[in-house]
Amino acid sequence: MASVPIEGRPGAGAPRTIFRHRLSTRLWHWFNALVIFVMIMSGLMIFNAHPRLYWGRYGANLDHAWLEIGSTPTQGLLRVGGLTIPTTGVLGRWTAPDGSVSTRAFPWWATIPSGYSLSAARRWHLAFAWALVVPGLLYWLWSFANRHVQRDLAPTREELRPRHLWHDIKDHARLRFPTGDAATRYNILQKLAYLGVLFVLLPLAVMTGFAMSPALDATWPWLLELFGGRQSARSIHFLCMAGFVAFIVVHLVMVVLAGPINEVRSMLTGRYRVPEDRP
Amino acid sequence: MISRRALIGMGAGAGGLMLSGCDRLTASPTFRDGLRAGEALTMRAQRLVTNRGALAPEFDAAQRSPVFRANGTRRPSSPAYAAHAAANFADWRLAVDGRVARPQNFSLAQIGTMPARTQITRHDCVEGWSAIGQWTGVPLKLLLDQAGLRPDARYIVFHCADDYGAGRYYESIDLVDAFHPQTILAWGLNGRRLPVENGAPLRLRVERMLGYKHAKYVERIEAVASLAGVGGGRGGYWEDTNDYEWYAGV
Image (cartoon, rainbow over all chains, first blue to last red; front, side, top):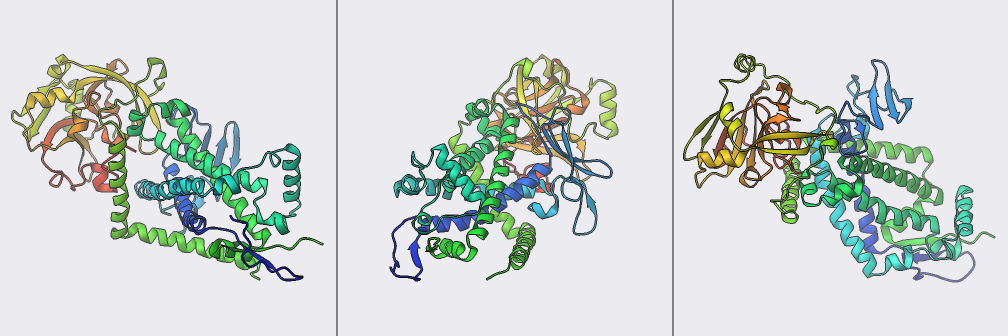
């Protein structure tokens, strides 16, 4: 994001347009919008092959699972720790498009491919992982080189003060979004969300993915120590996915609330119409 | 303005299109070849960044799984296997042939007197679960050295006793993995003779690879120059029947 006005015309009623997103940001955004859906949906199919998560170095059916999506003869169930939630129709027990009832964990509409195939899901997941990681690394380096990270994403000391944070949280909760000059910069919650995805979720998802590879574990045994074992890494990998889903949901809600046409246009053309100050 | 209802409708429509599109792509041979190129890239990249002699992590006795899960075939169905199992595998033979100078036919007793390696390693099923067990067996290298590989041998193929209807189980590895110090033909699990459900009397342990490479009930080891003439040509039972990766390092 750059705050250089290129069509700013002073004067009453004339909307101010700024150039907000560089081409690299826009390309990476839309490419990722596709890739992340493939990664999540093929990952859910891989999870369907063994719908249980464990902490530690090992974990198979007879071991204690902290999360499990299963079914009884009549119900779908999600079990987290000691909590059991009925999920019939969505998780663990659902109706496939051909009318048959399936007891796979995630339903057909959430997975790639939509019919059960672990091998096909693995091919999608591992091939698209390249599409996530290579452009991601290039974008990372480029964003440091062109100072996007330092200038637009790094929070200032003032923004990190609890009072400032709380103020922004209250404004968001009341759906009062920044206008005027403030709208040309990311606010602190946006900064934290984007930094969290770029520098926490993405690297963590990649590293825990590596830690699940028996070949990479042989070369980098510290990966296992870092995450506390392969099954812990698998659990964290799944939680990263949940983090991505949460980010995408909030992101889309914010786009709709902030004015979807202006927001989507700015991500397509780079130009963003600055909301006028409230009177 | 686009109404909220229209937006949701568009979202659902796009999602549906994307899903059926993905299914069509999965069914397309060209696209599958494209994804397979991803597998080749993953294999090359892993071999580039990893030391191919690196040892898989080994664990303490206390870190073993309380129960080592048995998967796939739990007892081969053939009468021949049943007879061997009833006789405690006294007459069981392991053949080593193919592109070798001196074809071998080892008895289980002979294999039991050869130098053994014991290792506590983690077994990672492609489905996602893991189990840690202590394996004892003869390094595959010792068997291959006795047979003497011919210069054109490139892969080691394991032919197994378990019948899957579509054919006998088989798997293959390259020579780097075949001569790796942790690659053993195990006859012991957790200090006892290998149980039938875990692959008795002999199973392959090829640590650093996913579970389906660790062939159970191995009865013949064949050195080949190419995988083209073996089974469906993709190097293994699951590779041939279900399009799993031959390189199962990830």
